[in-house]
Amino acid sequence: MSIASSGQALCVHGALLWAATAWSGFLMVLDGPNPKLLLVAHQKGFLHSFSLFGFGAALYMGCFPNTTPTKVSILHCIALHCVGGAWSVISQQLTSYSHHNTDRKANTCFWLLAGGAWVSLVGDTWAAFLNESLPLGAEKTGATPNPDGLCATVLKLSAMAMGIGSVMLCAGVNAAGLLGKAKAK
Image 1: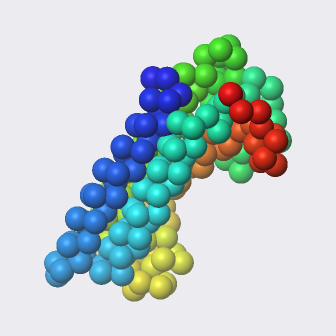
Image 2: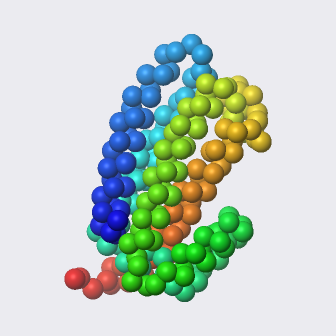
């Protein structure tokens, strides 16, 4: 998948996620799930769909020409610190590709962002039906706190996937474009 088609695909997934999230709002009339956790899933689904729209449009417009630079940058160091050993494996794998193979890098970012967004919607909705959440969410919604449960693990992994995908894209930004000094093509 090329950089432009990765951007288009992110926008399509943003639209599909937005539609699925809109329809998931009707789950709130059911008696079984926790309505406050369903509202959280609903809001997060919309926010993730807007993130996919934004990243997709920026990727399509060429805002991330290097997608993942071949040299280790400060963003790589921050991600390594935040995510830990998993990032070192992913970063080593991605930076071993040639500079001309940005299509594969854009495709990897696409799967991390789109996959993380969809898994988050499913995981949050599932957590509402199980009435369990991370401790802070459980305190606010009256759910059972279960920070080590399967739902919590799925939600943490989806957040990591979206975080890694966004850091990879932002690491390839054209720095001159941040100050409005990028050359027009």
